Amino acid sequence: MPYKDVTEEQFKTNPYAALVEGQTIIEIPEYHLECGETLYNFPVAYKTWGKLNEEGTNTLLITHALSGSAAIDSWWGELLGKDKAFDPSKYFIICINFLGSPYGSCSPVTIDKSTGKRYGPTFPLVTFKDDVGIQRLLLDSLGVKLLAAIIGGSMGGMLALEYLVTYNNTGYVKKVVALATAARTSAWCISWNEAQRQCIFSDGKYNGGYYYDFDDKPLAGLAAARMAALLTYRSGSSFDTRFGRKMGGPNGKDEELFSAQSYLRYNGSKFVDRFDTNCYVVISRKMDCHDLSRGFEHDGTNDPLVTVLQGLTTPTLVVGIESDQLFPLADSKLLADNLPSSLLKVLNSEEGHDAFLLEFEKINSYIVNFLNE
Image (cartoon, rainbow, N blue to C red; front, side, top):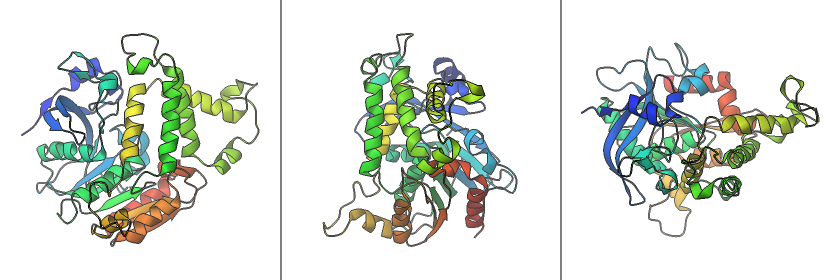
Protein backbone atom coordinates (compact mmCIF):
# COMPACT_ATOMS: atom_id res chain seq x y z
CA MET A 1 0.00 0.00 0.00
CA PRO A 2 1.48 3.39 -0.96
CA TYR A 3 2.31 5.85 1.77
CA LYS A 4 0.99 9.40 1.98
CA ASP A 5 2.93 11.90 -0.15
CA VAL A 6 4.04 14.84 2.01
CA THR A 7 6.59 16.37 -0.35
CA GLU A 8 5.04 19.83 -0.54
CA GLU A 9 4.43 19.93 3.19
CA GLN A 10 8.04 19.05 3.96
CA PHE A 11 9.40 21.52 1.40
CA LYS A 12 7.54 24.27 3.24
CA THR A 13 8.74 23.30 6.73
CA ASN A 14 12.24 21.99 5.98
CA PRO A 15 14.41 24.35 3.90
CA TYR A 16 17.08 21.69 3.42
CA ALA A 17 14.60 19.23 1.89
CA ALA A 18 13.66 21.88 -0.65
CA LEU A 19 17.27 21.94 -1.90
CA VAL A 20 16.82 18.48 -3.46
CA GLU A 21 14.88 18.93 -6.66
CA GLY A 22 12.79 16.06 -7.97
CA GLN A 23 12.69 14.01 -4.79
CA THR A 24 9.57 12.53 -3.25
CA ILE A 25 8.86 12.55 0.48
CA ILE A 26 6.41 10.09 1.99
CA GLU A 27 5.10 9.70 5.52
CA ILE A 28 5.44 6.46 7.47
CA PRO A 29 2.92 6.11 10.32
CA GLU A 30 5.11 4.37 12.87
CA TYR A 31 8.49 2.70 13.39
CA HIS A 32 10.08 1.32 16.56
CA LEU A 33 13.76 2.25 16.67
CA GLU A 34 16.60 0.09 17.92
CA CYS A 35 17.16 2.51 20.82
CA GLY A 36 13.67 1.76 22.13
CA GLU A 37 11.93 4.96 21.04
CA THR A 38 9.22 5.13 18.39
CA LEU A 39 8.85 7.57 15.52
CA TYR A 40 5.30 8.46 14.49
CA ASN A 41 4.08 9.99 11.22
CA PHE A 42 7.59 10.79 10.04
CA PRO A 43 8.99 11.64 6.58
CA VAL A 44 11.28 9.57 4.36
CA ALA A 45 12.74 11.16 1.22
CA TYR A 46 13.87 9.40 -1.93
CA LYS A 47 14.62 9.96 -5.59
CA THR A 48 14.43 7.50 -8.48
CA TRP A 49 15.61 6.99 -12.06
CA GLY A 50 14.53 4.37 -14.57
CA LYS A 51 11.58 2.00 -14.34
CA LEU A 52 10.87 -0.97 -12.10
CA ASN A 53 10.32 -4.13 -14.14
CA GLU A 54 7.17 -6.22 -13.76
CA GLU A 55 9.00 -8.78 -11.62
CA GLY A 56 10.31 -6.08 -9.28
CA THR A 57 13.84 -7.45 -9.59
CA ASN A 58 15.92 -4.76 -11.32
CA THR A 59 16.51 -2.30 -8.47
CA LEU A 60 19.83 -0.69 -7.67
CA LEU A 61 19.75 0.88 -4.21
CA ILE A 62 22.39 3.60 -3.95
CA THR A 63 23.25 4.74 -0.42
CA HIS A 64 24.70 8.20 0.24
CA ALA A 65 27.47 9.40 2.53
CA LEU A 66 27.38 11.72 5.58
CA SER A 67 26.63 14.99 3.84
CA GLY A 68 24.87 13.53 0.80
CA SER A 69 21.24 13.50 -0.20
CA ALA A 70 19.01 11.34 -2.40
CA ALA A 71 20.21 13.31 -5.43
CA ILE A 72 22.75 10.86 -6.86
CA ASP A 73 23.13 13.15 -9.84
CA SER A 74 24.69 15.82 -7.59
CA TRP A 75 27.50 13.65 -6.16
CA TRP A 76 27.83 10.51 -8.33
CA GLY A 77 26.40 11.96 -11.53
CA GLU A 78 29.28 10.66 -13.62
CA LEU A 79 28.13 7.10 -12.84
CA LEU A 80 24.52 7.77 -13.84
CA GLY A 81 23.41 7.29 -17.46
CA LYS A 82 23.08 4.80 -20.28
CA ASP A 83 25.85 2.19 -20.38
CA LYS A 84 27.24 3.50 -17.09
CA ALA A 85 27.21 1.82 -13.68
CA PHE A 86 23.79 3.28 -12.86
CA ASP A 87 21.98 2.75 -16.16
CA PRO A 88 18.32 3.92 -16.01
CA SER A 89 17.54 2.03 -19.22
CA LYS A 90 18.43 -1.22 -17.44
CA TYR A 91 17.80 -0.60 -13.74
CA PHE A 92 15.30 1.01 -11.42
CA ILE A 93 17.67 3.22 -9.44
CA ILE A 94 16.72 4.60 -6.06
CA CYS A 95 18.50 6.54 -3.36
CA ILE A 96 16.78 6.96 0.02
CA ASN A 97 17.82 9.76 2.36
CA PHE A 98 18.82 8.16 5.66
CA LEU A 99 17.57 9.11 9.13
CA GLY A 100 19.27 12.12 10.70
CA SER A 101 20.07 13.83 7.41
CA PRO A 102 18.51 17.29 6.93
CA TYR A 103 17.57 16.60 3.30
CA GLY A 104 14.04 15.31 3.80
CA SER A 105 13.94 12.19 5.95
CA CYS A 106 13.21 12.40 9.66
CA SER A 107 15.91 14.37 11.49
CA PRO A 108 16.42 17.09 14.09
CA VAL A 109 15.05 19.71 11.65
CA THR A 110 11.81 17.74 11.16
CA ILE A 111 8.76 19.05 12.97
CA ASP A 112 7.59 16.54 15.57
CA LYS A 113 3.84 16.45 14.99
CA SER A 114 3.19 15.63 18.63
CA THR A 115 4.72 18.93 19.78
CA GLY A 116 4.54 21.17 16.71
CA LYS A 117 8.25 21.96 17.13
CA ARG A 118 11.42 20.67 15.50
CA TYR A 119 12.95 17.62 17.18
CA GLY A 120 16.25 19.44 17.67
CA PRO A 121 18.47 17.81 20.31
CA THR A 122 15.61 15.54 21.44
CA PHE A 123 15.94 13.53 18.24
CA PRO A 124 16.66 9.90 19.24
CA LEU A 125 19.81 7.91 18.60
CA VAL A 126 19.38 6.17 15.23
CA THR A 127 21.40 3.38 13.62
CA PHE A 128 21.93 1.81 10.24
CA LYS A 129 19.73 -1.06 11.39
CA ASP A 130 16.91 1.47 11.70
CA ASP A 131 17.60 2.74 8.19
CA VAL A 132 17.46 -0.78 6.78
CA GLY A 133 14.10 -1.48 8.40
CA ILE A 134 12.52 1.81 7.36
CA GLN A 135 13.89 1.68 3.83
CA ARG A 136 12.51 -1.84 3.41
CA LEU A 137 9.02 -0.49 4.16
CA LEU A 138 9.40 2.08 1.40
CA LEU A 139 10.88 -0.40 -1.08
CA ASP A 140 8.05 -2.86 -0.42
CA SER A 141 5.48 -0.12 -1.03
CA LEU A 142 7.07 0.61 -4.42
CA GLY A 143 6.83 -3.03 -5.49
CA VAL A 144 10.53 -3.89 -5.14
CA LYS A 145 10.82 -7.66 -4.63
CA LEU A 146 14.60 -7.83 -4.35
CA LEU A 147 17.68 -5.65 -4.80
CA ALA A 148 19.83 -6.46 -7.83
CA ALA A 149 22.56 -4.62 -5.95
CA ILE A 150 23.12 -2.14 -3.17
CA ILE A 151 26.00 0.27 -3.69
CA GLY A 152 27.47 2.78 -1.28
CA GLY A 153 30.64 4.53 -0.22
CA SER A 154 31.85 5.70 3.18
CA MET A 155 28.77 5.92 5.45
CA GLY A 156 26.76 4.67 2.48
CA GLY A 157 29.03 1.63 2.46
CA MET A 158 28.26 1.04 6.12
CA LEU A 159 24.56 1.02 5.33
CA ALA A 160 25.13 -1.32 2.38
CA LEU A 161 26.97 -3.72 4.67
CA GLU A 162 24.14 -3.56 7.20
CA TYR A 163 21.79 -4.75 4.42
CA LEU A 164 24.25 -7.55 3.75
CA VAL A 165 23.98 -8.73 7.35
CA THR A 166 20.24 -8.22 7.69
CA TYR A 167 19.31 -10.14 4.55
CA ASN A 168 22.05 -12.77 4.51
CA ASN A 169 20.93 -15.99 2.81
CA THR A 170 17.45 -14.60 2.05
CA GLY A 171 17.94 -13.80 -1.62
CA TYR A 172 16.69 -10.24 -1.10
CA VAL A 173 20.10 -8.67 -1.86
CA LYS A 174 21.84 -10.16 -4.88
CA LYS A 175 25.07 -8.16 -4.82
CA VAL A 176 26.77 -5.52 -2.66
CA VAL A 177 29.36 -2.88 -3.54
CA ALA A 178 31.07 -1.30 -0.53
CA LEU A 179 33.56 1.48 -1.23
CA ALA A 180 35.93 3.27 1.17
CA THR A 181 34.22 1.88 4.24
CA ALA A 182 34.57 -0.53 7.14
CA ALA A 183 32.78 -3.36 8.90
CA ARG A 184 32.93 -1.37 12.13
CA THR A 185 33.91 2.15 13.08
CA SER A 186 37.44 2.30 14.45
CA ALA A 187 38.61 4.17 17.54
CA TRP A 188 40.44 6.52 15.15
CA CYS A 189 37.24 7.39 13.30
CA ILE A 190 35.24 7.73 16.52
CA SER A 191 37.87 10.13 17.84
CA TRP A 192 37.69 12.31 14.74
CA ASN A 193 33.91 12.40 15.08
CA GLU A 194 34.20 13.42 18.72
CA ALA A 195 36.66 16.19 17.89
CA GLN A 196 34.20 17.52 15.31
CA ARG A 197 31.31 17.39 17.78
CA GLN A 198 33.38 19.30 20.32
CA CYS A 199 33.90 22.02 17.71
CA ILE A 200 30.13 22.31 17.61
CA PHE A 201 29.57 22.10 21.37
CA SER A 202 32.18 24.82 22.00
CA ASP A 203 30.18 27.29 19.90
CA GLY A 204 28.28 29.39 22.44
CA LYS A 205 25.39 29.77 20.03
CA TYR A 206 24.78 26.02 20.00
CA ASN A 207 22.81 26.34 23.23
CA GLY A 208 22.59 22.60 23.80
CA GLY A 209 21.01 22.23 20.37
CA TYR A 210 18.10 24.57 21.11
CA TYR A 211 18.82 27.22 18.50
CA TYR A 212 15.94 26.98 16.02
CA ASP A 213 14.05 29.89 17.58
CA PHE A 214 16.98 32.23 17.00
CA ASP A 215 18.18 33.89 13.81
CA ASP A 216 21.80 33.67 14.96
CA LYS A 217 22.61 29.97 14.53
CA PRO A 218 25.80 28.11 15.63
CA LEU A 219 27.51 28.27 12.26
CA ALA A 220 31.09 28.79 13.44
CA GLY A 221 31.16 25.46 15.27
CA LEU A 222 29.70 23.59 12.31
CA ALA A 223 32.18 25.24 9.93
CA ALA A 224 35.08 24.22 12.19
CA ALA A 225 33.74 20.65 12.35
CA ARG A 226 33.55 20.53 8.57
CA MET A 227 37.12 21.83 8.25
CA ALA A 228 38.35 19.10 10.58
CA ALA A 229 36.42 16.49 8.59
CA LEU A 230 37.95 17.68 5.33
CA LEU A 231 41.39 16.77 6.66
CA THR A 232 40.23 13.15 6.97
CA TYR A 233 38.69 13.12 3.49
CA ARG A 234 41.92 13.90 1.65
CA SER A 235 45.56 12.92 2.09
CA GLY A 236 48.62 14.91 3.07
CA SER A 237 50.18 14.34 -0.34
CA SER A 238 47.05 15.60 -2.13
CA PHE A 239 47.18 18.82 -0.09
CA ASP A 240 50.89 19.24 -0.77
CA THR A 241 50.34 18.71 -4.50
CA ARG A 242 47.35 21.02 -4.70
CA PHE A 243 48.39 23.81 -2.34
CA GLY A 244 52.03 23.49 -1.31
CA ARG A 245 52.92 26.74 0.40
CA LYS A 246 51.04 28.95 -2.04
CA MET A 247 49.36 32.04 -0.68
CA GLY A 248 45.90 33.42 -1.39
CA GLY A 249 42.44 32.04 -1.99
CA PRO A 250 40.12 31.86 -5.00
CA ASN A 251 40.39 34.82 -7.41
CA GLY A 252 43.46 36.12 -5.59
CA LYS A 253 41.59 36.86 -2.37
CA ASP A 254 42.85 36.21 1.17
CA GLU A 255 46.42 37.09 0.25
CA GLU A 256 47.44 36.91 3.91
CA LEU A 257 46.40 33.23 4.12
CA PHE A 258 48.05 30.11 2.82
CA SER A 259 45.96 28.56 0.05
CA ALA A 260 45.34 25.49 2.22
CA GLN A 261 43.89 27.69 4.96
CA SER A 262 41.72 29.54 2.49
CA TYR A 263 40.43 26.26 1.06
CA LEU A 264 39.37 25.00 4.48
CA ARG A 265 37.71 28.28 5.47
CA TYR A 266 35.89 28.58 2.16
CA ASN A 267 34.51 25.04 2.31
CA GLY A 268 33.57 25.38 5.96
CA SER A 269 31.59 28.55 5.31
CA LYS A 270 29.95 27.04 2.23
CA PHE A 271 28.89 23.91 4.11
CA VAL A 272 26.90 25.76 6.78
CA ASP A 273 24.59 27.13 4.09
CA ARG A 274 23.38 23.63 3.25
CA PHE A 275 23.56 21.61 6.47
CA ASP A 276 22.13 21.62 9.97
CA THR A 277 24.29 21.49 13.08
CA ASN A 278 22.16 19.06 15.11
CA CYS A 279 21.96 16.77 12.09
CA TYR A 280 25.74 16.67 11.96
CA VAL A 281 25.85 15.56 15.60
CA VAL A 282 23.20 12.87 15.07
CA ILE A 283 24.81 11.43 11.95
CA SER A 284 28.30 11.33 13.45
CA ARG A 285 26.91 9.40 16.42
CA LYS A 286 25.21 6.99 14.05
CA MET A 287 28.59 6.35 12.46
CA ASP A 288 30.14 5.71 15.87
CA CYS A 289 27.57 2.95 16.53
CA HIS A 290 28.43 1.03 13.37
CA ASP A 291 29.62 -2.52 14.06
CA LEU A 292 28.35 -5.45 12.00
CA SER A 293 28.98 -7.83 14.91
CA ARG A 294 26.89 -5.81 17.38
CA GLY A 295 24.13 -7.97 18.79
CA PHE A 296 25.65 -11.29 17.68
CA GLU A 297 26.59 -13.91 20.24
CA HIS A 298 30.13 -15.25 20.17
CA ASP A 299 32.25 -17.70 22.11
CA GLY A 300 34.76 -15.15 23.33
CA THR A 301 37.75 -16.79 21.64
CA ASN A 302 37.63 -15.24 18.17
CA ASP A 303 36.89 -11.71 17.02
CA PRO A 304 33.09 -11.76 16.65
CA LEU A 305 33.33 -9.51 13.61
CA VAL A 306 35.39 -12.10 11.73
CA THR A 307 32.85 -14.78 12.62
CA VAL A 308 29.98 -12.64 11.32
CA LEU A 309 31.78 -11.73 8.08
CA GLN A 310 32.69 -15.33 7.34
CA GLY A 311 29.01 -16.25 7.45
CA LEU A 312 27.94 -13.69 4.83
CA THR A 313 27.59 -15.32 1.42
CA THR A 314 26.30 -12.53 -0.85
CA PRO A 315 28.76 -11.60 -3.65
CA THR A 316 30.44 -8.38 -2.56
CA LEU A 317 32.78 -5.98 -4.32
CA VAL A 318 35.03 -4.19 -1.82
CA VAL A 319 36.83 -1.08 -3.05
CA GLY A 320 39.63 0.22 -0.85
CA ILE A 321 41.68 3.37 -1.38
CA GLU A 322 45.42 3.22 -0.88
CA SER A 323 45.66 6.75 0.56
CA ASP A 324 42.46 6.68 2.66
CA GLN A 325 43.20 8.02 6.15
CA LEU A 326 39.66 7.75 7.51
CA PHE A 327 39.00 4.13 6.52
CA PRO A 328 42.49 2.76 5.83
CA LEU A 329 43.05 0.06 3.24
CA ALA A 330 43.37 -2.44 6.09
CA ASP A 331 39.62 -1.98 6.74
CA SER A 332 38.83 -3.03 3.18
CA LYS A 333 41.23 -5.96 3.37
CA LEU A 334 39.55 -7.16 6.58
CA LEU A 335 36.26 -7.27 4.69
CA ALA A 336 37.68 -8.94 1.59
CA ASP A 337 39.74 -11.48 3.53
CA ASN A 338 36.73 -12.71 5.49
CA LEU A 339 33.72 -12.37 3.19
CA PRO A 340 33.55 -15.73 1.38
CA SER A 341 32.30 -14.32 -1.94
CA SER A 342 34.21 -11.06 -2.14
CA LEU A 343 36.38 -9.28 -4.68
CA LEU A 344 38.83 -6.57 -3.60
CA LYS A 345 39.79 -3.68 -5.83
CA VAL A 346 42.43 -1.24 -4.62
CA LEU A 347 42.13 2.28 -5.96
CA ASN A 348 45.56 3.84 -6.34
CA SER A 349 44.90 7.53 -5.85
CA GLU A 350 46.49 10.25 -3.75
CA GLU A 351 43.07 11.89 -3.22
CA GLY A 352 42.47 10.05 0.03
CA HIS A 353 39.04 8.98 1.25
CA ASP A 354 37.24 11.24 -1.23
CA ALA A 355 38.69 9.30 -4.16
CA PHE A 356 35.45 7.27 -4.16
CA LEU A 357 33.71 10.50 -5.20
CA LEU A 358 36.44 11.73 -7.54
CA GLU A 359 37.90 8.80 -9.47
CA PHE A 360 34.78 8.34 -11.59
CA GLU A 361 36.28 6.39 -14.47
CA LYS A 362 37.87 3.71 -12.28
CA ILE A 363 34.87 3.41 -9.96
CA ASN A 364 32.49 3.15 -12.90
CA SER A 365 34.59 0.38 -14.46
CA TYR A 366 34.76 -1.61 -11.22
CA ILE A 367 31.00 -1.47 -10.68
CA VAL A 368 30.00 -2.18 -14.30
CA ASN A 369 32.25 -5.23 -14.49
CA PHE A 370 31.01 -6.55 -11.14
CA LEU A 371 27.33 -6.12 -12.00
CA ASN A 372 27.82 -7.81 -15.36
CA GLU A 373 29.54 -10.89 -13.92
